[in-house]
View (cartoon, rainbow, N blue to C red):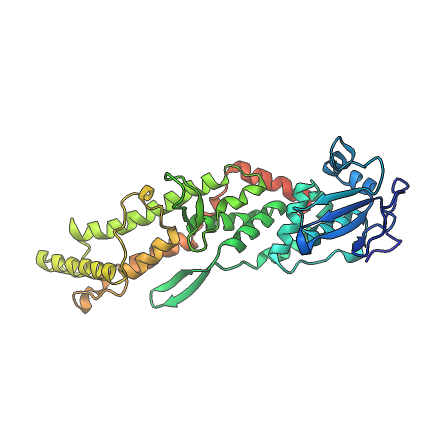
Length: 368
């Protein structure tokens, strides 16, 4: 707990009465902050002048015509029920020069996000510059929404239980200006969201295709166009997947996908065997018909469609051993790898998104 060596000011001369649960960020402080809700609530004694000098938001809140300003009599107490006590203490220690208690690293992305949310709220991003690089190291550990199973045909991607860790990672990366991480998470949202059935229209709210969390939770970072942008990219990727599926069917019904025989009847028989295998798999796994248009695929994520294709197009027996090269498994493997492992995600962000991230990097020092 910070002692008398903490930053003080002659302005901080009207301390509130002592309290047994009070943490003295500045023992001579004149302001009590009551932070959080319920059993997690914590009280901090701080110096109002230190906060005023730290950021315009504090100055306006504490020294403007608001209810948080100093009362004419009695202790000066400000309630901040929406703030996280542990996260705010980190920032208060920084502002009061209690550097020994400021963590050099952050062990959880969720904790980092809480701290960065408050730096954004109180316009204090530049104040964390000395710690930004070490704190950002946790963002290198990607929370996996995918479990890449290996099989003879390559990776099979299985959805994890919740996209919430990815939202936290994206928001933390945004606050720090960490473009590569934010862009990769944006691509994760493109591939792993569907349209919430409770909203109307093809541009309804995007949710995780498993857990149901609204992607609009990311609105807090101030990117009002982000969800619409992700929704447009999602439709484009899903349309590409649907086109791939219908092309596989079309080539075996209208033309021919047989690569072995020149005999018309044998080619037709080869195509019919594979089409029968696709139909069998569709019945076996109880998949509905694939829509023609991405606008009719609200209940799907791009990832779920790829996994459905995996079960539809693989494990099909050919006409005979010579016709194994006619099977759609190689086409599927190449296509799925192109979707998942290609360079497309590096172009997910719009130019003004990248400009905003660059400005944040200058403030946090990640640009150097």
